[in-house]
Image (cartoon, rainbow, N blue to C red; front, side, top):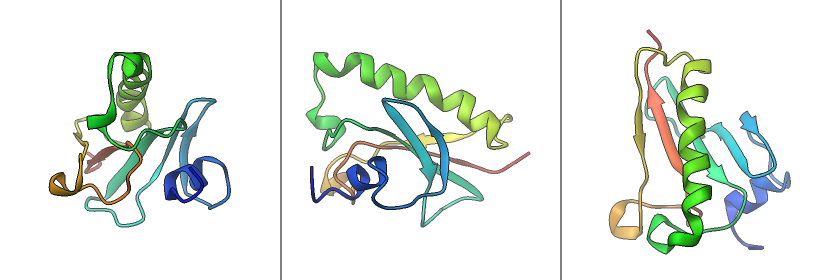
Amino acid sequence: MSDCLFCKIAAGEIPCDKVYEDDDVLAFHDIRPIAPVHFLVIPKQHVASLSDCGPEHEAMLGRLLAHVPKLAREQGLAAGFKTGINTGRAGGQEVFHLHIHVFGHKA
């Protein structure tokens, strides 16, 4: 999507403070953190929100979630962390590209 902020970040058109990247997933620090550690995990494939996901997205969703514990540990959150997925305007979603917030305090 040419006007999607996170698609532009995933394509390297807009810089980010990268935590992790592979062919399908990108993780980067949130520009407006709500905790000492706060990063996002996104699919490089554009999906607007969790409500747009169906059975065809199961592998992608599993891949995103499977990265979270490892990345959280690497960011100093071995003692625990929170995750959140804001879905739709009424759910607090501001950027309409699926993303998982991971946040917490270093132990």
